[in-house]
Image (cartoon, rainbow, N blue to C red; front, side, top):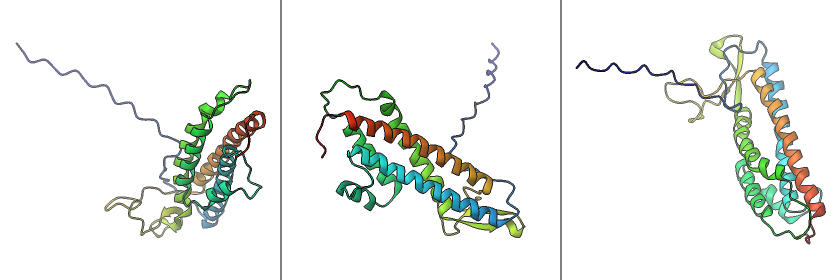
Length: 205
């Protein structure tokens, strides 16, 4: 009996890229000034994200950013975006399970968007770090400029490999737009918690 021919394999479906995955630009900027401007804007846009994250945490503490609340002061003393986001996760999980005796219903949308939105923040924080710790440099001594990782960054420059990212002002402006969108959605989340605090018949801590 002749051997069976193996069935042809179906081509693998490429995995969809997440928008926060680092791109590798092929054509650089003609002016380094365009990159410097894009870097400054992106870092400012990210600081707005950090501020609205603090607002979310303040709402979970039934406080606000404009009062010298000990919990908010402690939050601001934590080093690192991921560590602060972990604080928000832990506070939010507890907040959404606290007993409630009123007739209002906790907003389902806030519960649904809470963890996925924080997960996005962690991913986008990595792109913010790329921008903050990168360096503007002409590629191969050409007149095209990119943002590369710093040369001492072992994780970003693997032996015998190109850098893990190479950005132009185009990619960085795309990140800025993503940071602005993140800010808008986090503001919506904070508003859910703030409105809930207004109807929650529970003494402030």
